[in-house]
Amino acid sequence: MLKSKKCFCLCLIILLTACMPTDAALVSPQVVATNATRPATTNSSSPSQTAEVPYPIDEPYPAPIPTRPPQPTETPFLTPTPPPLPTPLPTPQVTVIPTAVPPIIPDAQTADSFSILYREDNLIKQLDGESKEAEVILDTFATTSLYLANRSHGIGWYEWGSLSPDSKKLALVLSTVPELHLPSQDTPSFSIYIFDLDTRELTFLVEDAIEPVWSPDGTKIAYRRQIPEQDGGISSGLWLFDLVAATTHEIYSVEQNAGRYVTQYSWSPDSKAIVTLDIIAQSSVKLVVVPISNATPPTTIIPETTEDLFSPQWSPDGSQIAFVTTQSKQPTSQKIANIWVTTPDGSQIRQLTQNIFVTGGQPTWSSDGQWLAFAGAALFESNEPTTEIWLVKADGSHIKRLTAESNNKLNVLMPIWSPNNSIIVFSKEQTELWVYQLATGDQRQIGLATLGFIIKAKEVK
Figure 1: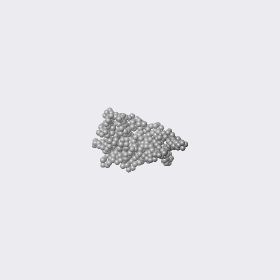
Figure 2: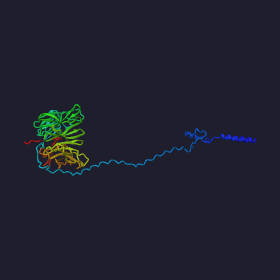
Figure 3: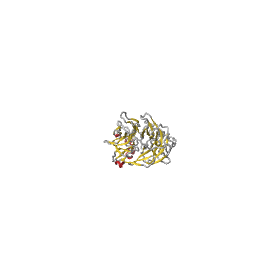
Figure 4: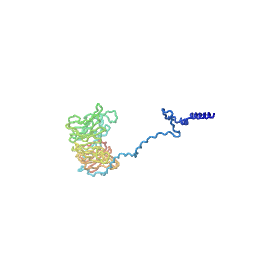
């Protein structure tokens, strides 16, 4: 009986042992649930192998540590170096030029006989150099119902009329409209008329023409053709009217659609050639010598440039052409218009003035070709330079200041020689006419006139 009880207990122990859970069954359900997203690794070929136990919750699953890429070598901060600014040219050290001591030029005479022609609206007036009251010699509107061309038409100071070499006739530009203010629906036409100063007769010469310039021999008039074309362009070439043959023809053509035109031309003293500006509006300009005969082609003296270039004037002896340009070798970055001279073939060219801004009218030659009179401002002499009258020797060896108006703040403009080179006639503030005696240095006002006056020699009786 006792032996049977022992056997029964032993069997019960064995049975309980077989029914006890394994170690995997002792893991907390919370732990299993928390790590359910990470499946246990099993081996299907060994079903009896114990499943891998997840990490405890208090020891989170370590994320893989990535291999740290090598850190780039630190580049020190670089401040970009700006390009060097151009070194500004220093203001030239200018010695103030005093007014010249008379006599200004050797052998200057003390008197001259001449008259001054000028325009006032549609009136042409004549004023004697002896300071007499001006006389109206022509009213263009009353005579022809046409208007004397003015600056609103694009006609410059010197372009409204040209005096014949014998001082007996005027070539005038007349317009069909009184003024032209762009944009305008008016289409003016221009014609050239000849006014006889002795008989006071006005006769038609050529239509569609502006800017007449009389040849030195008195046989021709150069002018710019002003004809609107069908394509909208304007023919603005250089033409000649032969007063002897009463014929006209073109001697220098330009491309009308390129905005090109000729202007500010000057005759050679032998009347065989003309120097002119060939301009492309708002673009460039070149200086050209045009022969009257078609036997030789035009000669370009100054090639196309974007610099200012103006006022070409042939010397009385024909050996030089003076002109004004901002193309120069200046000791400053400021653009300054200076007088230059060149030979007619362009082989020799030199600068005559420096640091004096040439303005207020074109430089004019003395009749002997020794001097040029011009208006200019000495820019570096003061903070408020005014325009004065100057003379410069044709070879550049001497420069003389005739006026010094800085204290009065008056600009003096448009110097023109009297016929015997004894007097310089000029304008103050565009309204007053003055004369300067080269022998004595005396100056006085002789009347009132607008810009663009013409000196007329009087006949000696």
